[in-house]
Image 1 (tube, rainbow, N blue to C red):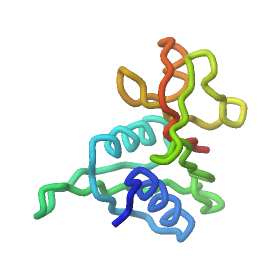
Image 2: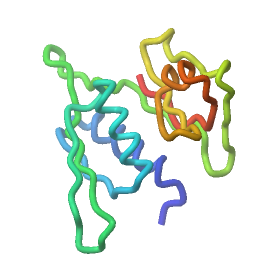
Image 3: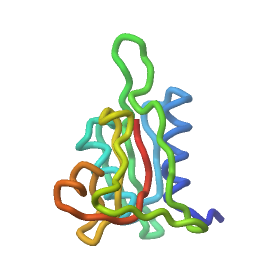
Amino acid sequence: MYTDPIADFLTRIRNASLAGHKVVDIPSSKIKYGITKILFDQGYILSYKFEDTKNGQGNIRIALKYNSHSNDPIIKKIQRISTPGLRKYTGSNQVPRILNGLGISIVSTSKGLMTGKQAVKENLGGELICYVY
């Protein structure tokens, strides 16, 4: 039993991309759905699909994206920031820029999950979920 499902989600993506897998299956939840949607919208994954399972929880099937020339994964690093033991919050004026704007931070705000750039644009702060680059 794992105590941090978001860290498990990010670790499965990280391990699958480093191992060169094309597809990774992850147990579904609403926050994982939101993170997956952001990763797809920002171009870090190729596609995703939600499947029902017998236990009713569902599954997220993510097709990972690789560089066509060098076959390197597009996601170089995906790192959990706020953990259940140590929550990290940020104000709207202190949302970090990742790799000078080349990466993204995912923030959980009062209006849902969004990238750090969107949070700054909408003048919202919140919990820093992860960094992706």
